[in-house]
Image 1 (cartoon, helix red, strand yellow):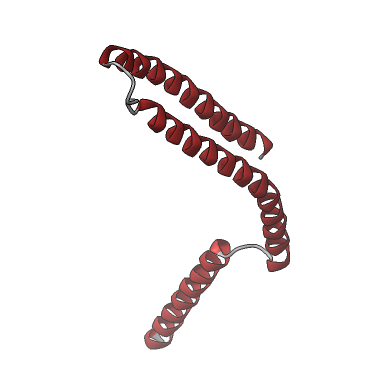
Image 2 (cartoon, helix red, strand yellow):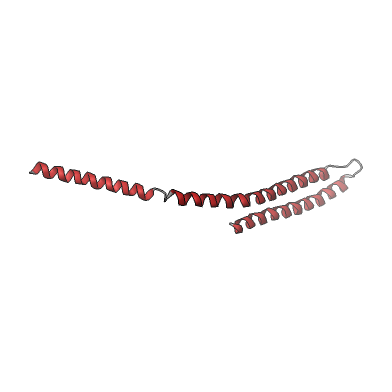
Length: 120
């Protein structure tokens, strides 16, 4: 009788352990596949709709930055008819103008980021 009771206890413990493992795996598994796929499709569509607009704004921002940097570089060069004092003064004014332009462009990018965050 002792051997039979030991086997019953051991097999029942193994069965309980298997049920516990299966239940933890089932709890960690994602929900029904149909429901999660439809949610992913909705999220991808929502992302694609905003991505094009934001991407165009970022391209426009990058283009403005490139043009401003090229303009600044041209303006910072000394002209052949210019005195040292006039060149230094023009450089100072140009640096101030360049800083203002970069702040304006950065403000546009911040506005894009805030706008895209509020749309989500």
